[in-house]
Amino acid sequence: MRLPDTAPELGQLLQDLPVDRLQAIFQHTTPLPKGRYLHWDELRYRDPPEGLSRTDWWVTVMLARTPLLQALPLLDKRGIPFRFATPSPVLIDLHHIDRDAAGQIHTAAGEPLREDPNRYLMSSLIEEAITSSQLEGASTTRQVAAAMLRTGRKPRDHSETMIFNNFRAMEHLRSLKTQPLTPERILELHRILTEDTLDNPEDAGRFRQADAVKLIDSRDNTVLHDPPTCTELPARLERLCAFANADETSLPFVHPVLRAILLHFMIGYEHPFEDGNGRTARALFYWSMARSGYWLMEYTSISHILRRAPVRYMRSYLHTETDGNDTTYFLLHQLSTIRRAIVALHEYIDRKVREQKETERLLSASPELRTRFNHRQVALLTHALRNTGEGYRVDAHQRSHNVVYQTARNDLMDLHGLGLLEKAKQGNAYVFFAPEDLRDRLAALAK
Image (cartoon, rainbow, N blue to C red; front, side, top):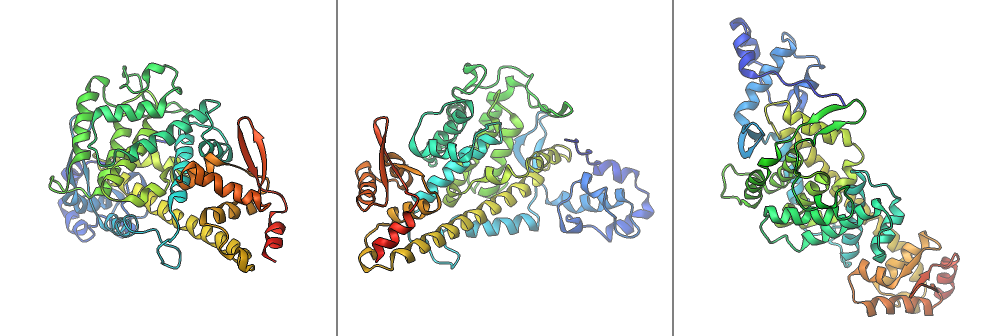
């Protein structure tokens, strides 16, 4: 991708500015030209206000933004602090996330979800494991990967191993959300994420050993990012952990959602590992959000959103590096990603609720069957009606609903006994299949 032009420095622009231009400039100062937090590389292609050149226009923007920017206790490789601002678009996004990511899961009608949410959590963990790995090169179908994770089958190739490791790492982080972050825990997370997937197995769970690692655009060999030297990584990760563990008493105050995003940003900037930096960064974002009480984020997949527009993801990093370490560009991109992930979660829940109600209406035609099935069986039948021939294993059903093995087995055997599932042996385990005429069989039972 093309590197964005570096933003002109305000000090130099003011030094070169004729005095008679100042009055016109001060009449137009705003941190949000065209209502957006534009980078110079975007602003310079737009028409400036009447009477101003594009350079004049950039001066008006920087005069308004500079007082908003606060220095962070996070440094670039030159020792210069990163900065952030909270203009109105940031505050609006934070308001929505505060409202939507720390409360109950709701249906479209606004009612709290009354079902066991574990199956939604399982689906989201699977989605994040798959798409986070695909962002870094994993290649397999979502259906095959999801079946592997639900059944607990061992991965068969490199791509499946990446996905399997990512799923394990997300589950591991759930157990650490009340624990402080340390460099040792970051290394352990990386080991889980990259085990059996690296060219050099010794690189799993250790900092990179050389400075040859650079982010390069494979299309034209443009160097997009040259990270700090590897000898500085232990000290830099200590500083990052101190930032991640800080609370609201630390100065400057950093909203918990912004702190989680900045943790994500800095892992990408430091690039502490030979490979797997993106997966580690996104996983630590989830840890930080859960630690701050945004538990609903466990049910979302940010990688699913990022995968749709990876160039925008990279550009938000580059805009920060080419405008005086202003991380606001990255913050705004990730806030938008979070909000879209939350919307996608609610759309997914609404769709599943509608599907389940359709099945319930079918079942409610019979007084005998009206209370015959529990919510897990209804969920399975709902899925089976749309996936004819799908196989269901006891251990997969157990994982999806977070119940003990015997409960899961009873669910499937009960449906088999009613003729709604067919049973066949695969290896040492039984697999239950949805017959092609499942709807007819349900309708017959409902008479």
